[in-house]
Image (cartoon, rainbow, N blue to C red; front, side, top):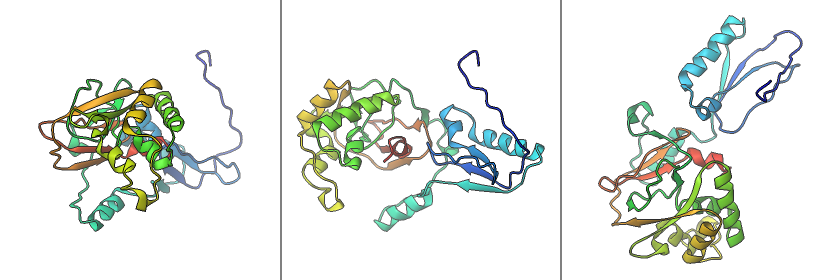
Length: 260
């Protein structure tokens, strides 16, 4: 309380019938004293850098020692890793699911000084690593939301900063700001048949708007030689590009952070 916290007082007797373990990021359930349930937001453990399995075991042990029900419902996102793999396999991809444990030494903590950058696996002039990866950097957010104006792009730039990341877009040393393949596909209408409207700005105008709103411009170099696409669902973790062993890196968990 002295440090700025809040003291809550409960009333009545415990009558919980079930434990909900919620893994849907930035979502929760609310208590109902007339239909009681324990609610554990497992995703929040990751937000505070906790050991998630240990956190959930401790929560289960707490319920047991309080005499609560040994009945759990695990709430997961509407799309599972298996469904993602199945969707990709349906498009002719070779897709497999790997665990975070098998990626030990490659997954790193997301850092606030790292730029929210493109999934591009090439080399870069950027030294501010450790940020989440999305197609085209912040263009992915605008594209998904149907934001096509310069003003809308500036607002997204500020939103990304307010959520603890350094916003960015990129070009490359051969095509300048049109060197971002994702933006080039978007602006030339390759997503039209998917229902995504084209941006009302070109690559130079978009980069200038992001920069003016406080974002960073990254420049890539070299040719594309990615051998694999990593789709990472481990919250607040990312992988880093390696221009000598290229891979596309998509931090799928970041989509939830921005309501995509």
